Figure 1: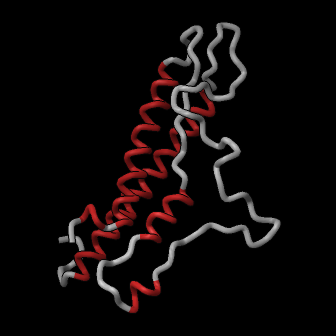
Figure 2 (figure 1 turned 60 degrees about the horizontal axis):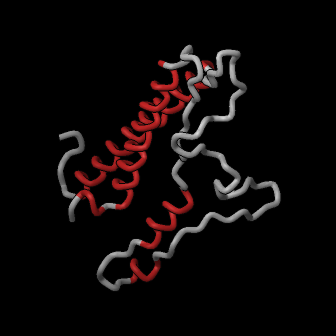
Length: 150
């Protein structure tokens, strides 16, 4: 089985790629924090619910008891206290669109404090993805009978 065919590893790589693009965009916003007329840019967040549906729909090629038991995963609010399960409300900004921030007198819309907070969050998320990837590779090595870390 090729590494690219493992859905979880593919999802982790996809998230890491998105985080790298997001950090680049944040660094551009921070670099232009004092540029007159610069509009802060955002990046649309991936839809985790759609990713779960895609991963849940992936089935092994052989019909087996395990394959029959695998069903797509759907996010569902089971209580009125649960938050919504979609990003339809506009949680993420579209690429190239200004982030909703009050412009400075020079027309710049970069909020340096919120950009730095987002950089910290992106770094933590990236570190988490690296650790998840490392753990998954360790599980694969263990399944193949090799010692983890070798």
